[in-house]
Length: 418
Image (cartoon, rainbow, N blue to C red):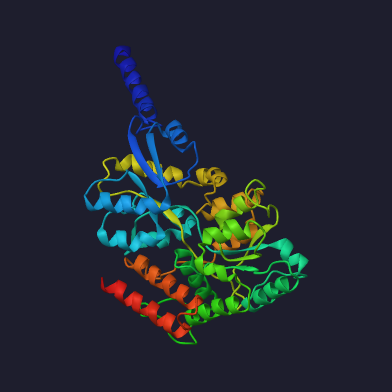
């Protein structure tokens, strides 16, 4: 009888052992994917991912402005520019309408969606087209020494307080033009106006994309009037009509020439507090966006990772997206200037003291709203161009606020019709 029992016991033991042996920790090892992202990126991304998963990554980087044309050219031709690509918030509507990207709802769990609140910006008609990997929302950046030297003890919570503080800084001769505000025909002028529209308590469009900024009592109208007032009062440099936001950040605010960045980028805090790159290192902090009511608001401009439908390596591509947007990796990648999109990662970095202006960033991140409640429309790029062209004309005195608002409404109507 033992001759039957022993083989049976051996079979049972083998059956018990097999599941453990069959659970491969690197089930996709040996596969290769290409990833296309904006430069610069952390130097160890590909090596770290391959060490953990066995999947080889060919990481390709281009300047942000060059990525979209490359994506569109390839995807129109039906070829994959990469297995995983950049997806900016402003492209979501256009790329969704084209049907180019794989919905990721089944790949991303509910807890992750809850932790990455800005994922809703990449959700169109219930389809998650990209998983946000780097956070970008608007805060206000200030030179706290300029405020202290001007005798401003409390940071402003209302726009009137902000103007009063800027006037004190100017009167004391601390900064000739205290407020940094791009007014050129560039995206930075558009995003600053969007933020101030929120600050004045409004939205750009109603649910049917009818403009909400034409009336003098509307938030958008007041926002542009506010910008022109700052210019007239000598609180904004007239040269701003020809400057991009990057130029104002790097050549003025980081050099201590201006005191306030109206539409501040959290990702610049590290650079601005680095003595090798900035003359104001240790003096710059983020504060919550002041508003008319005193209740702060902001909007998100995050970047996501997406997978083209024509990718031949979807499973490995999904593995990369999940790894790159995990809490552990987001905390690690923060040193490369990628602000975490996960609230948990942001909070843990702050608690460990590794986040510049951490309390303000965590608090502001909880107020981040989509710019378009319906999702970013396909015609956003044309609309934004119309916005900043009109703002630039108004700042140069070539248009009234009425005319600029009408020009923006006309640009929106034309963009929608194309």
